[in-house]
Image (cartoon, rainbow, N blue to C red; front, side):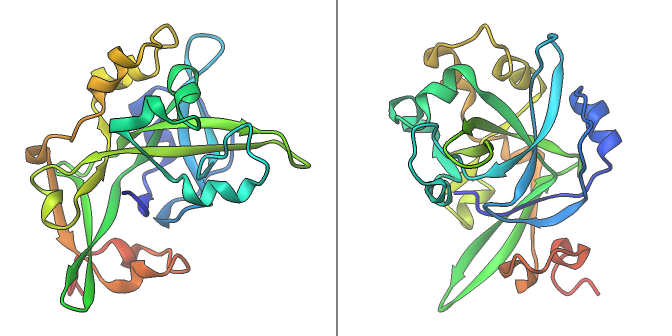
Amino acid sequence: MCGRFSLFEDVEQLMQQFGFEFAGEWDPRFNVAPSQQVLAVAPGKDGGRKGAMLRWGLIPFWAEDEKIGYKMINARAETIEQKASFKGPLKKRRCLILADGFYEWKRIGKDKQPFRFMMKDEQPFAFAGLWETWKNGREPIHSCTIITTEANALVEDVHDRMPVILGKDQQQIWLDPSVEEPALLKPLLVPYDAGEMKAYEISTLVNSPKNDTRDVALPLNSK
C-alpha cells in the first residue's frame, strides 16, 4: 500500500516539470496522510493540464457516507477495472498525484522501522491516481486514490506493495482523455524501475501525521 508521502518542491518548479496550471493554495508537505489534501494534475478543458487539491481517499459518487474514503486511499492495479468504485474513474477520471518521496515500514521483531523511497536524482515524480466528485454532502468533495502494484526489487525488502509511479511518456498516456480501454491502461500500472530509485531509514517521527517538518524526511542519525 501507500499510506504516507511527501511533496516539498517549489510549486513553480512542479508546474514547469509536469506542465500544468495551478491557481490554488499549496504549502510544502513532509508527511502527507490519508484524508488530507494532495496536489493532483488532470486534463483541463482546454486540452492542457490543471492542478487541483484533492482529498486523499476516494469517495465513490454513489456512497452514502464520505467516511468510506478512509478505506479507499489505494486501489490495487491488478483488479482496478473490476471494482465498482474504480472502474468508472479508470475510464474517465485519471490523474497524477505529485510526490517527491513515499514512506513504508519494515517490521523488525516487534518494532517497525520507517524508510523513505525516492528517485536517485531526488526529483519529484507522479503516482498514478484516480479522482471522483461526491455530491451527497453540503458541499461537493473532490477526492482521489493512489494506485498500487507489487513491489520492485528495492521496495520488496520493506513492503510487498508500492505505489505506481509513471514516467513522462506514461503520464501522457494516463492523462489522455481519448484512452479509455483498461487493456491500454493496465500495462502502465507496473513496478517502477528499482535502478532509478533509492531508499534510506528515517526516524519514527513519520509515525505521527502531526509531525510535518523537514526532520521527518531526513536520513536516520543524520544530525
